[in-house]
Image (cartoon, rainbow, N blue to C red; front, side, top):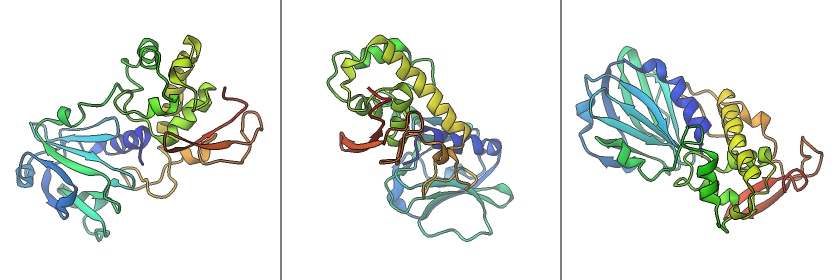
Length: 267
């Protein structure tokens, strides 16, 4: 699933489209439309006023009160293409732009979706603070961890606690912080909580700098793969040697999620 760095990369790669005229919105498969507050035809003649991100959601505004909110689910892509190129199978929604360009929502597994809404904040209202924003402080993390028996990995995957972190970056963040993913969140001391906060910032910013992680499905807004998969320390590397200490990396299922960690570096 595309996580914060992947979605942020898509949003940044599409910024040059702000100001472009919208020719129309083609809904090919209504199944992916999760909410429709206005008919797609109302977007014709409008311009793209903003392209932003909240958690794992892409938010496109028309400069007025109409918004398109996009979630990519497990295998979705949202990318710019030439209208002359055939639309691949599993292309469900297309934002048609001026000068023969199209923003295409492609999702073979259809776990994502699109909201046509006047109130995008309601779509994302249950999300916790952004991990790269000012609200995610040491005190906030300490309050979320306090007396919690849940595994720390499960806690940081909770989108209502912190928005945007998924399985890949959770493993990498906890390795960077030196914390085992199965540790009860309430067992972290103040120094470990600060290490966790710093590792979130460093890992997510590095993921964005390398344009996200591509194993199979993910592409940025220009349909190009990311490069962070070449920098992963633990995720998907079970049995391989930890690049920090040389200990074999372990894999365990924690909270129903496959988890990777170094038994020596992470305590």
